[in-house]
Length: 71
Image 1: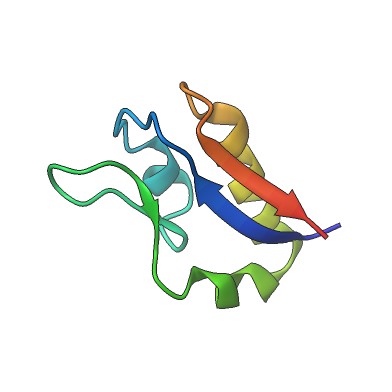
Image 2 (image 1 turned 180 degrees about the horizontal axis):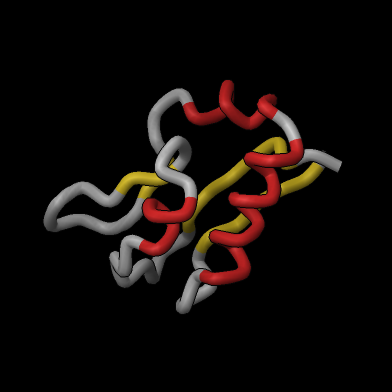
């Protein structure tokens, strides 16, 4: 099952881990918290390698605010 949706809920501490792991999907603008990049949905079709990295970001988030929905 591939990831079809990624989002970040409130509570991000801007540790930059998600951006470091998957810079194609996540960004942490200076002075802000993490967010998904505009247009990231198109990248979700890339396949299992990107899915694995996104799942690593989900699993590694210290405050558990990154979520991924699989189809």
